[in-house]
Image (cartoon, rainbow, N blue to C red):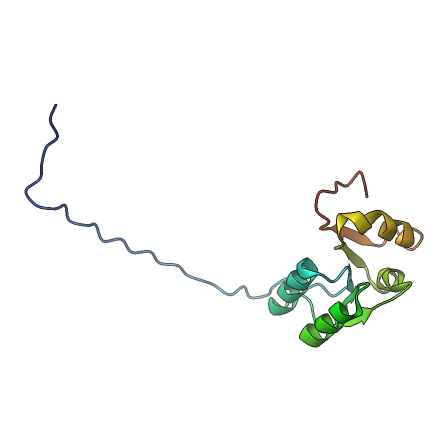
Length: 137
C-alpha cells in the first residue's frame, strides 16, 4: 500500500478550552499553633503557602532552627515567632498543637530524643523528613 497524498492541508480543528476558577465561599483555616522544627527551604515553602492561601495566620506559626541567620530570614520574610539555641525545639513543641518535623535526616534522631518527653497525645506530628518512615519516628 502506498500512502495517500492530500491535495491540500487538513484544516486545523478549533479547540476552545475554558477554565473557570471559582473561589470557595469559605476556605479551611487552621487556628491551632503550627510549629516547625527546622527552618530550611521546605519549611519556608510550607509556611509561605499556609500564609499566602490564608490557611493560617502569622500569629499561629512558629519555628526553630540551630542557625540564627536562617531564623532571621524567616522572621524578616514572614514575621513569625522563632526560637534558637538549646531547648528551642522543646519551646516549639510546648507552644504548638501541630508539630512539623522538617530537619535533615541525619538530625532527626537527636531531635526526637530531645522532644520525646514533651510530645503528648494532643499533638499532631507531621514529618517531611526525607527517606524516613513512620516506624522510625
